[in-house]
Length: 329
Image (cartoon, rainbow, N blue to C red):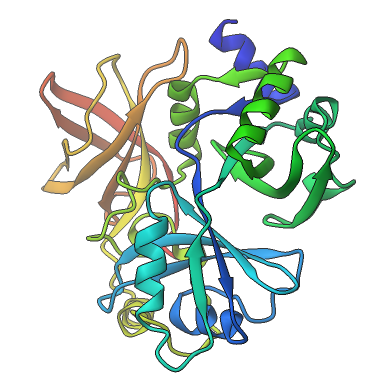
């Protein structure tokens, strides 16, 4: 199947995405919601069972250690983080739980599968996963338990990846592979990793290890919307509030459109007239038949539509800032 057909399937029907996925954790204890609300940047208290939110674990300087998706259940919280972060996130949270009734443990037997596109629910239904009616249209992070005769106990959430809404299925490893086989048998295509990555860049979604690194503030990498400004103290809040109140945000996440066909590389320097250190490229990719696009953390002094240059091994690459994420989302 050509990449153009897979892209059309994403836009008109459904595809599934292989990849690193998520680590899944389970938080329990009477203080589970209040503790996460108090330690991380986003809203957890007040989120009803069946709903969810995104939040950030910051260090004391206000820089991003992890992005957490929190899903509220009747007697526990389910937390999803990028693959390979589960152990470190559990340890990082646990060290703050001194007087709190809070426990969090990875569930290594569980893995995730993303099915994206406007007919994701129908595709899963045809494969044998009875997605509750309306879940795909519910607010982002809405979720439900699903019992399946073919695949056992599943958990399904409304999610978004590579710029497209869809459904995230959490299952055992054998069940996940069986669902993949059923999707393929039903004619649902696998979206190639390089296409998923290019779409992520176009959608300006930050990724762990690329945009999300321990030396970046959330407002620099498109995660300002994961901060709840109505709540009390959380780890790193002092720095975040100071940045907000003083308005001294110097960098933000931007999308670059390259003028030529040469790809930049992560770490390439971005320059502009009068700004020899305007920023750095963090990710690069290309959709079929199109020039490369890149994400970069660049100076807020360069306006949307501004011309920049990327200092690459292949020479100086001309580019334009064609998209940006406002610091506070």
